Image 1 (cartoon, rainbow, N blue to C red):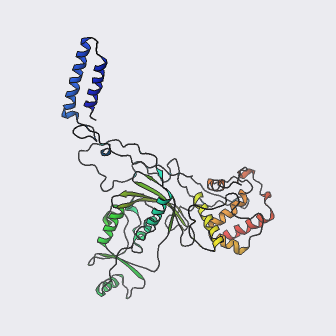
Image 2 (spheres, one colour):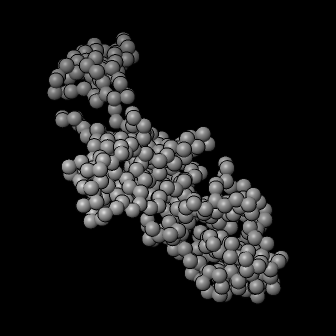
Image 3 (spheres, rainbow, N blue to C red):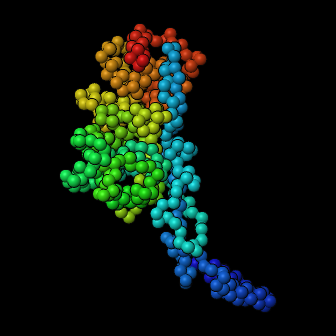
Length: 436
């Protein structure tokens, strides 16, 4: 409703309350009504954004808030160690910081996207405050898990980028991203071999046309190849307007999505990758809902075990460790390797993960455990946690706090390693030996 209309209604109410009062009061109110009406008709007064010419409100026409809030969780810090206390080796800042430090969209950090610019002459309006992000339910998580594991999408989770123009195109297109690749003609084959100085194509080949790549990127990011800040690094043959690469392996990974949230048209999803037979990567991918589906906005790598894609992401979160433990328990029970626990991590929080205080572990057992270094760290630190040790690194305090038997009572300078029994001493020594 226009300002002039609202003022006139307010003044009419006042008029109803002034019946029987002095005539001069009525005169003054009448003059105010007249002036208000003139103001409403004055073109210089304009009309409120989000109203039509009759002054009718249209809330959907106004700006909507787009602020993102951080997901639940905790931050982790580094680990130190010696033979007298837990060896704390992880040292990367963590995940899901409620204060917004990690994974939160910073004000002004996102570049304008296609279709986001205002039309000429449109006045800037303050954004409406958005509601709190909603946690995704199980059906939504399984939907996005399936979506992100598609051949055309998984590559967007294999590099870190704050905006899509900085994503690693080689990871996205490494296996062809599911796009059609017509048979290569003899003439094209010869041109490629001449360009690379070879006599034969020795491995598998991916060859994609520039028009294909542009259409794919426009659909997935709203950008085209010439707007990307990272190059493709493939052989380009201008006479065919195609890019070519050879490789003899694959970068395909499968991802498990335990948690996520939606805020307006933005989806932030926490993902764990198995790396074939064990968890090796943890990330938060942000998607934007558009008319054609979803576009990738950013990907934050929290943990990269191998350091291939982010060298300083060597520490998983406490929640990721619980999934690693769950996969290990499943492996022992079912004789399987890899795979994800269905619907959460079915861990008995009333008991320690390992029974290292009641038997000697064999070298073969410890070698199986140490194949996943995160398990060895849990094994070693659990010996201390069982006796009330308070860890210097909050990662381990958060992790063991999920177990009902853990009660942190002794900081490092008050802890006495003499409480370990013979089983614990021998198992701890073996674990440390295999870690080195």
